[in-house]
Image: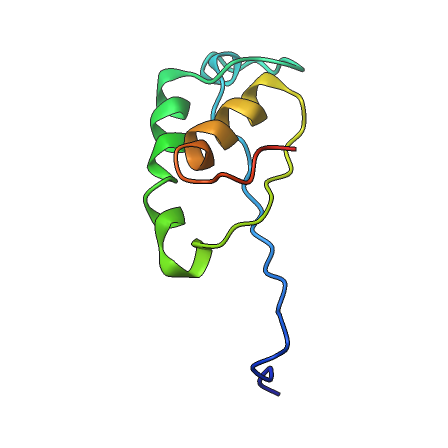
Length: 85
């Protein structure tokens, strides 16, 4: 059933962190920074996230790990004034 005009729908977008330095070497570390490939991948998310569908992002929730913060900042920070939480 379609939503009425005065009914707000909540949309949730889940994004996994990009590849880390340790992962490129076949290792897994609890908190690691993004590899250059991961930086590029996270930055490339910014383009589709500017589409009208995601234009009114209210909040971005992210864990405090380096890889997740770096992914979120590269994907959202340049256009989202909502802040990261």
